[in-house]
Amino acid sequence: MAEANRAAVGLASYVYAGDLKLAMQIGERLEAGMVGINRGIVSDPSAPFGGVKQSGIGREGGQFGIEEFTEPQYLSVDWS
Image 1 (spheres, rainbow, N blue to C red):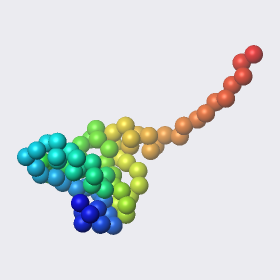
Image 2: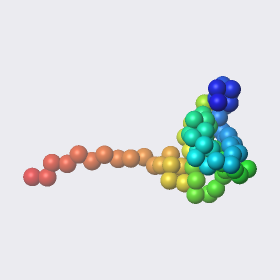
Image 3: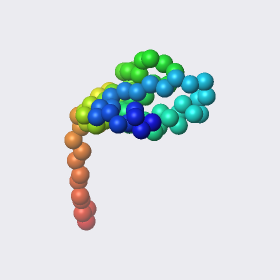
Image 4: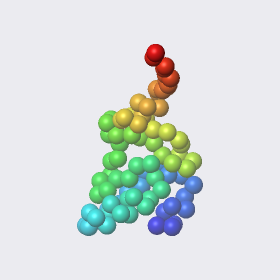
């Protein structure tokens, strides 16, 4: 795990295992924006796409990607 997370980039990582619980635990510990578990494809139009570290900040696609293109507005009102 330390060797995998030592990389300066973290777009995608992959875990192949026969034990799903173990694979999920490993996946959660990997410093990567996307983790494929027992599959070689991680991108999907409905899923956020992006990395961590020097692989970028933010996400494209999915709910999180849409939020990157919005600008929240706060309205403070006294209605009396």
